[in-house]
Image 1 (cartoon, one colour):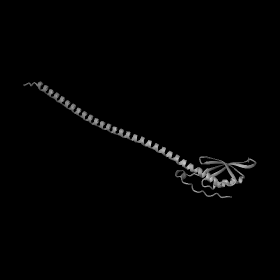
Image 2 (cartoon, one colour):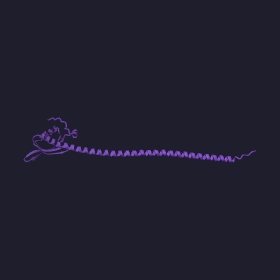
Image 3 (tube, rainbow, N blue to C red):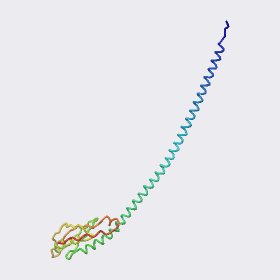
Image 4 (cartoon, rainbow, N blue to C red):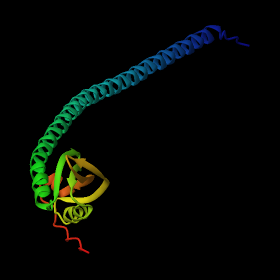
Amino acid sequence: MIRINLLPHREMRRKQQQQQFFLMLGFIAIVGVVIWLTVHTYLSDRIDEQNARNKYLQEEIAKLDKQIEEIKALREQIAALLARKKVVETLQSDRSEVVHLLDQLARQLPDGIYLKSIKQTGNKVTITGYTQSQARVSTLMRNLESSQQLENPGLIEIKAVTQGAARINEFTMNIHITRTKQEESAGQKPAPKPAAAKG
C-alpha cells in the first residue's frame, strides 16, 4: 500500500487561501478608501457650493438692508417736506382767512353794534361788543348764519353796562369759520350756504 504525504499540499493550499484572503482584504480596503474619498469629495463640494450660496445670499441681504435704510431715509425726508408744505399752506390760508373774517364781520354788522374785541382760536372766533338793544344782537346772529365764511353763531352772554352816562348792553358771542377738507387741501372756497330764513 502506497502512502502519500499530503502535508505539503495542505500547507501550500493554506498559504494560497491566506494570500487570497489578504488580497481580498486589500481590495476591500482599497474600495472602501475610494468610496470614502468619493463621498468626502462629493460632500465637500456640496458644502463649498452651499457656502458660496450662503455668501451670495448674505451679500444680497446686505444690499437689501442698505436699500431699505435709504428708502426709510427718503420716506423721512418726504414726510418732513410734506410737513413743511402743510405748514406753508396753513400759513397762506390763515393769512387770507383773517382778511375774510374782518371783511365778513364788517359786512354782517348791523347798525347800532360796535365790536370791542375779536379773538381767534383755531376756527373758533370769540367777539365782544356793545349794542343799543338785544334785538340787534339777534339780527347780527342771523346775518352771521347766512354768511358763506362764518357759521354756528352762539351767544355766550349779554348784560347791561354803563358807558359814560348811557346804559348799553355788552355781549360775548362765539362763531366758527367755515372750513372744508377741500378748502384746506386745495385752497378752494367753500360752497355757499343757503340763507337762513328770517322770522
